[in-house]
Image 1: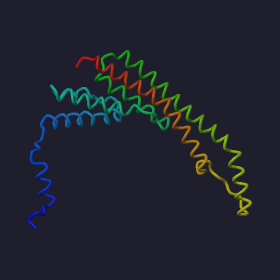
Image 2 (image 1 turned 45 degrees about the vertical axis):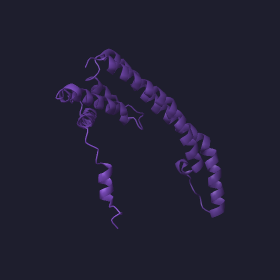
Image 3 (image 1 turned 90 degrees about the horizontal axis):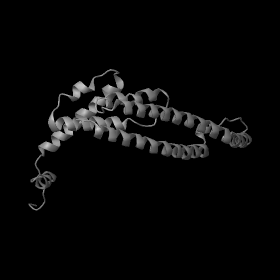
Image 4 (image 1 turned 135 degrees about the vertical axis):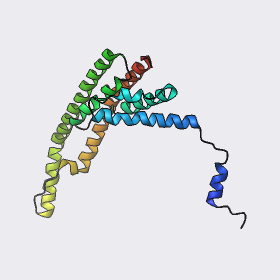
Length: 198
């Protein structure tokens, strides 16, 4: 029985030589603190993230800025609806605390706004076009069901598996095209950040 070790004993043996790396912990905490500021930037117009970022110095300041940038870039995404566009565009407010080339940043976000609105328009047009294409197919299905059941049945295109699959394929194609452009926007943000003095 003495050969059988408890889970606690095994865990203690495995972690015996592991000591906390203070620098890694400080880096993680600083990045998380920087990331946490992004919610306020996006939800509270006029929030002064610069003042909050200024409380750190040295490596901690750089890590907080890196975390802030990382979280801001994660919010540069395709919107599901028009109401999300303004919130996404507020990412620029946060970036303005990190990027000094405001002329280029403003130009980039003007292009981003056009891209996001174009995406929503393309998405709406695509859904409408697919609904029109499937209308005849759905009417035939409704007729078949009416003949089988003796009752009129309306089929919502969103409930039809074939329509849903076709829509999903087309949405994936559309999103892939726009994600490539969003990647270019994020790459440009990175370049502008690297060029900005710290």
